[in-house]
Length: 234
Image (cartoon, rainbow, N blue to C red; front, side, top):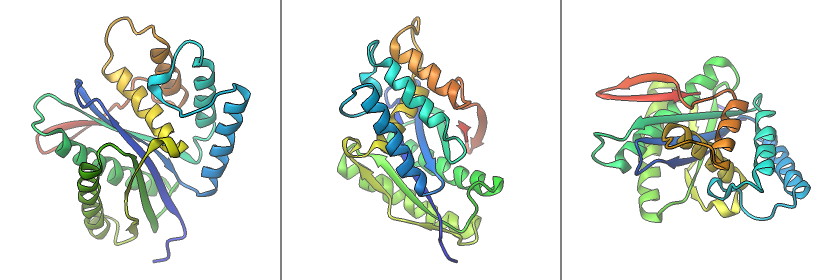
């Protein structure tokens, strides 16, 4: 098949030491949209005189209006950008790294099925994944494992109409899209692993962002794979 279009997915993970493990992602369905989003985020930065990397951990009272403006830019693009997240309760999971492979796989395979079935992102397509770099060795192992499973899924679930581009771990400092994946994933993490009064600027941003993209409270659809229950929003 001819792969004229690409699912360009930027993802991040969170909650490795908390009650819920989370993998969140932004899906760009049309390549030109990446340039448009970059331009609009740059305009936001200029307007608010914001320099540097977008990072959830750096949200505070003084820069909260800027971050909310970034959320508005993304929410306005919901026709061509999808926000997808999967989470699982960490209790009972022996090895977090194995669970993350499973979560990335479930996110990608369910995400492709969803976009194809709705007609927003019809197959055939290529699938390209960039995740925030953590540790080179474990990133390489994780990504090659997910790639292998997606290649198999393409054969038996998608009639070979999904081609897997080599997945990459990218340093978020250099790529705005991976920074945006951090904002989304960390927002979901903040809501799922909520503690205390939830009145900080980070809580305010997380609630605002998730509300603006129609996902208040994070993932809601319950699915069962083997003896694991996970939660998904597409």
